[in-house]
Amino acid sequence: MNKALLAIDVGGSTSRATLVDHAGRCLGQGRNRGGNPASNSPEQAASAIISAVEAAVADAGGQLDIELALLALAGPRAHVSQDRLEAAFRENGLTGPLVFAGDLEAMLASVTAAPDGYCIVAGTGAGAVRVRNGSIEAVVDAAGYLLGDLGSGYWLGHHAAIAVTADLEGRGPKTVLTAALLGAFGIAYSDEKAFSGRQLCLQQFVDAIYKLRPIELARFAPLVIANRTDPVAAALLAQSEAYLLADFKMIFDPAMPGPVALGGGIAPHLLTLPAAVSEVMRAAGHTPDVRIAGDGSVGAVVLALRAIGLPVDDNTVATVAASMAARNATSAVSA
Image (cartoon, rainbow, N blue to C red; front, side, top):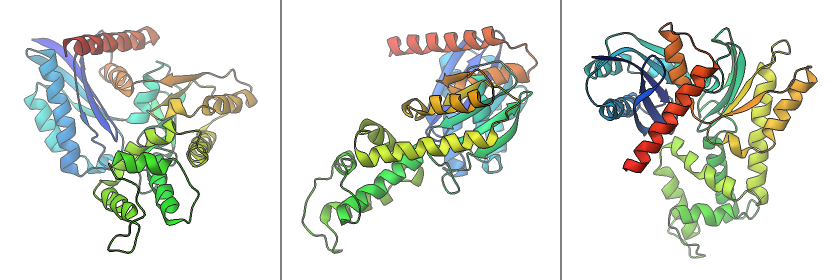
């Protein structure tokens, strides 16, 4: 029976499971919706994670001896259905331990094998961490949408919805986000009044918003990005960058030069953030080293390799990333 390691990167929008051999070569991948326990019920979170793992095992084909499973998790571990997850993983071939890591820790490991560095993440959630000797030493925000995640995809989507409501009520500036978000729900603009006394299209918008789980407001973040020349959208993106830069300044240690990983689906669209972070590093006397982290699941695999005691260097990180990309390309062609 072939030996393997299982790494699961769990975010607010997507859960991604990857099986690899000891060299970091990808054997199978699976994905499902977000399994963040801060934004889903324990049942929903566990189901999403388990489904992603089952898909990865099916993709690998054949039986595997999974020596270790590592869960790189956004959100509080206290809400994880650990017993249920471990039982399901064992049904799928896990013979060794289930260990946990932070999703921001995994994001840093996706771009470097260095034990020291920083990660700023702007995805469904947001925050920043300082990692020293391979462990998280300091964290700012990343506290979930009820307590923070300022500047995140959720934050952008939530404030876009607030801006649309203010526009339609006449208590806020006009914005093209109104047409974009109404269109996302298939709502036609109308001056007609609803039974509530509100403008009909506003009442329909309010009703549609409250049918969503709060974290699903993150789906509107791409509309903010797509309409970034609109003054309201531009202001939201500028505020997002300001929040994340402030997070970084709080965890930055002038004695530790980096690197800095910028990760999450929103991060590449915060156009001035890399330069602003670089300026903080330069002011401390360091050569800026800011890297865009494309896939936190690469970092989860790297952490799994490290957790089982295998040596990890930058060549290992590159091998993992290339192998996973090749597997993705093959799967896309097959589909």
